[in-house]
Image 1 (cartoon, rainbow, N blue to C red):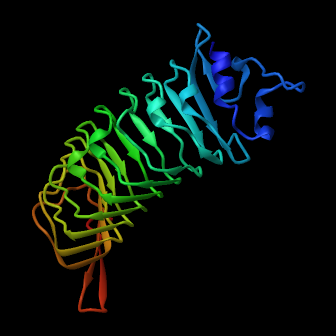
Image 2 (image 1 turned 90 degrees about the vertical axis):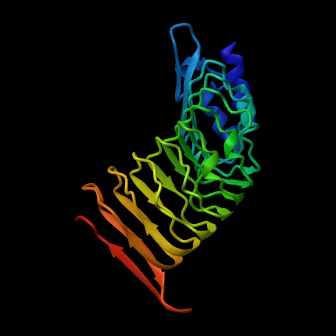
Image 3 (image 1 turned 90 degrees about the horizontal axis):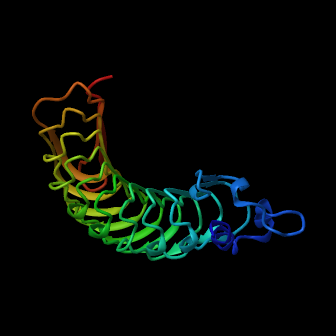
Length: 276
């Protein structure tokens, strides 16, 4: 039953936090009355929204998320482990376990096939990632503020992706923007160790913002074929020798910020405010 499954889900959180789901005698209350839990008319759990619900370090094992759950949020809950994401139910569309203390490597190989939104930001995940293993229909991925390493092959991102935030990790290697998903709107790869030449000449037509600040990108920052929807490009804090903006600038464009190195120790930051 969903009652027993949910009891297993919370069995390893801190005893002081388990009390939120128990009577004074220690028995679990009916899951339909648990904070953050939504059920349908058939008595099946469909949403679990725990945001700041747990106040002490503890663990959840997501293999016990009921198979009818479409949205699972355990944000800012002091979690140190969530089990294996491979065991999440296929029904899941929205996963948010951001702002916890979860560590270790991560595999995208068997994530739920219906997953649309995934936010695992502000944890302690580490290791390389296989972006080509993301679910085919995913739209929003947030990986910011972890310890991920290795290259960041953006050419492997699924065609469905609209938002990809991977800032404040330790990704290295080249930044290839030539084959981003056609629907992509927002990209942030700032504060990593990306290097080599980067060209901003083949951005998707729906792109709104592109941030690649504080990496080790070099060469001439070429910006051309600017998408009509684009509002902001921020690439300051790199090692560009110069930059050029070619072609028509769309009405939506608010800013381009870039750092130019003028000699070994001299940097000049330009904020080109195209439209105020």
